[in-house]
Structures are given as structure tokens and as C-alpha cells.
Image (cartoon, rainbow, N blue to C red; front, side, top):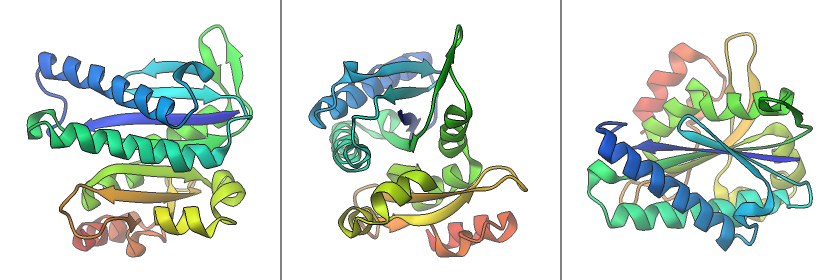
Amino acid sequence: MQLVSIEPAPVNGWCRDKVTMYLRETFYKIVQRAFEDARIGWNAGWAKARGNDVLVLLPSEVPLETLVGPLAAGLLAEVRLHNSLHRELAQLSLRMAVHTGVVRFDPAGAAGCAVQLVDTLIGSAQFIDACAAIGAELAVIVSERVYEQVLQDSSDLAERGGYGPIKVGEAGERVQAWACFHPFAGQPGRVRPYPRSARAGDDGESRGEADEAA
């Protein structure tokens, strides 16, 4: 099964309830349009809102190439259109994580190692800090399995996305992943990989050097 987690991050943070509710509504419209534009269809899988993010589970028949290609491109186009029409208070950035694996279900919903890994990817401090340091309007992180199955053998997708290695998770339990960052329009560089100095996974050096690189 293909797992996609998408999380909005308002430029000014979550503030007044009225703005928060508008941004949440806008976020789901952006995501649904991106799925439709990628010819996946919003109803093609199982979707669950969890706090501010949404977890989408898709059948394995949906190609991973579609998720890291057309879906990511659609999300970027939609969020950029939204931001171009709104002042900073209502602007959004997006983070997306992609993994593939076996998903279990219990009465509470989806569970298992695959779900835990996609949660680690989307919520890791290393990924979130890099998004902030670079000023990413859209950032995509994929598991090593996705990278090996899709990006490693597709120089077009990998080079166009600017994917670079990143280790995420708690100290002693780091997992290898790959990420790309699309900065807000007007910022230097169209696509930038995770800051080179942070790839070794040293928290002390990585965060400071990532800020310096931005």
C-alpha cells in the first residue's frame, strides 16, 4: 500500500480560530485538487485527518512515480497559486511524506510499522528544521524504500526534484530518507536539497549550519 502524509504549516503559524479554520478548509481543497489533477482521485483510497495533517492510503496499483511526480507538482502549483492571492497571514507551506509498505487496521484505524515510519518522516525535527531554514513552500520527504524503487533509477525525477539524503528520528534510532525543498518564490534557488552539512545527522552542527546555508 502507498502511504502519503501531507501537513500544512501556515507562514505565520496557527493563530486566530477564524484564520485557522479558513486555512484548514483551504488545505483540504488544495490537496483534493492536487489528487484530482494527478489523476489519482481523492476517493481512490482511504483518508484520515489527524490533527493538522492528513494520512492518505492508496492501493499499490497507484504508481509511486505519480506521487513523487504529478502529485507533488500539483501540490506545489496549488499552494503557490493560493499564496499569490493572499497576504502573509493566510499563506501556507506544505510538507509531504511518501512511503510504501504493509498497513494493518484495527478498530481505531490504520496502524503498523509503515504508518509509524511515515509519521516519523513527516514529523521529524530534522525535516521540519530544514524546511524552516530553507523557507520551503513545499517540501517532500520519501523513505529509503521509495527512493530505491523510484528515484534511484530515474535520473529525471531525482534531478528535477533535487532530492538529497537526510537522516531523521531520535538519536540512536535514525532512519535514512531523501528530501527535496521548493523555496517560496523569490528566494534564491528554485529547488535545493537538504543542507549538505546536515546530512551526517549530527544535531549540534546540522541545525546551525543549515541555518547558515539558508
